[in-house]
Image (tube, rainbow, N blue to C red; front, side, top):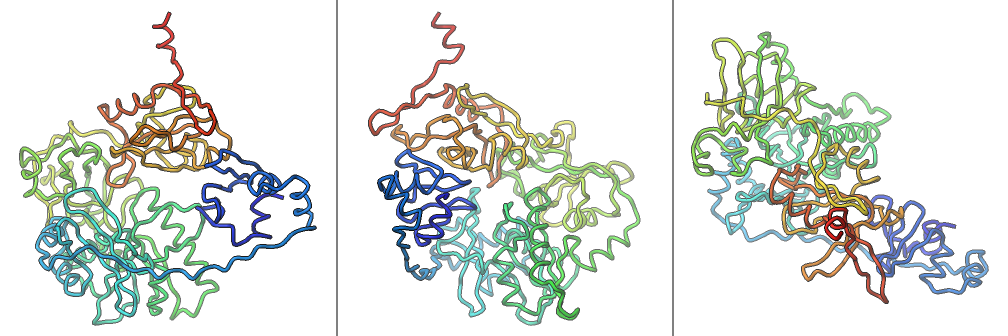
Length: 540
């Protein structure tokens, strides 16, 4: 009998889900159970069966363990599950003056009317230190239950302690019923779309706007995020769900999962009057009719700032703010990548903007068109380069020869393999590619002070992969060992970014240059650096 089956049958109160299909025990949280095996990390012992567990962990004699598993001395152990402690939302100290927040959101293209509405209805706050914008979500009783924090001065994004994602940020007009909810990854995305409605002289109050507080690629299919699930439960009149998720791998996977999940929830189909419908972009009937009305073809190219080369942090800033963050007010072509080239069915730049926010072409590789992006009209009387500003487009000088080629999907990393010196390598940056590199499901850890992420096989030890390198604390003491191949990569704006040729890359090549061999002396594990070929050559 494997350990997981034993605990489910005889000690269910001892079994605690750790993540996914990985479990630990209530008594020993460092004892992990996964893939038919178990390993007690703090004691450096493991096994496959319940018999191994009873002998090595419970310290039973072999005959006692066999008798217990044969049912001769089984006494199921029952635990009374304690009631969950109520979550208490802890907001940072709030500032009564929101001028800095208003200026920041305006620079991001949010319409003043949307900003004012959110402030008046308690959806938007500013922290007392004037560094963070705070987006708040409420339950049906009007109690604050969720808060997302976004720094106005750094890359920080987070949630307030006690936040419950069931009640994420939602923008619902209180003066009329709505039957349609538009779903976004973040609160600022929802506010941006409401601002677009105003720009195109449409009534933004006719629909509801919901933030999912982020999305992720789930191993399970047909998963509806808890924020959307709760919103539909609290607003039973909703009959249409429209998804506005990012046009990247995670966004597309999440959209497919949500649509599949909603299909399962609402099957068999209810009467047509109450049927809930889930659509991907374009957003609504008005948007579709406008696209059908556009008959002029424009030959365009789109350039977006590569965040890994944006040393002055000017991405998403308007023209008037450039000179505050860089040495001049001119657009720096060198930090841009070309993300699209082709003919589109539009007759104005505003039409291009709406298309690349509502119904992006399938081969578009970039982000939704936003402030700081540059659109090139290739031919005709209006040929030139146009900067997407906080309001409208501005013609600018721009050198397309200084931009970088389209992203190939490869990721430049520091690759660390067992028994080998660390080296710079390019790997497939897709989820499947990263899993192939480490040999299984990936796990990201953050053991460095720098904005660098270590990605490894989350089940490396359970799979018996060879030990690779030690992780050390600030006093250089070993606190964990990575098993199997791993790689180091930059972390910026919450996303994995490839290394540039520079100091960070050199630092992590040096950190893991020498392979390590591990030996146990008494209760201590030592890591012994192994020589590499260049060292052996010098010794001779």
